[in-house]
Image 1 (cartoon, helix red, strand yellow):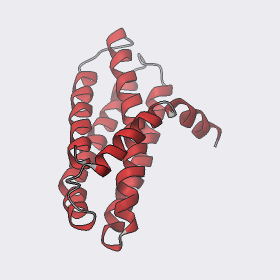
Image 2 (cartoon, one colour):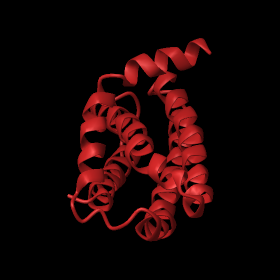
Image 3 (cartoon, rainbow, N blue to C red):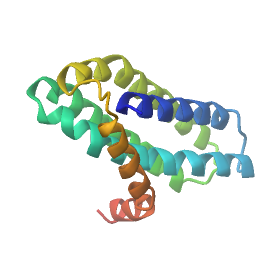
Length: 157
């Protein structure tokens, strides 16, 4: 699987989770389960994407601007996600903050697919061999176990 296919597959899964989360109410088991799935998958996805994809894009001068922009957005999104994760799931402001996250995350992944992917195809190639996609998948599995540790470290900073 190419890096573009792997990332798009994750993006589609995240869009679906966001849609389902938006339909939840209060501190329900459904909201908690969907959030946990989203939280862990997005955390691992972003870290693996930076390691396997954006590091290659940023290493090339023609890809630096787009790559840096996307990585900066990852930080903004991570701050929103951590804030939501620390909130009471039934708090009145949870859904308002979630709506902001949903809007910004959907904008981010659309921008990646529409802007970053075409630049990356020119700069780092089509990944027809699936090497970059394979690295992404491997890094994502490794990062999945580090999500909690990184969140705790971020709170200490």
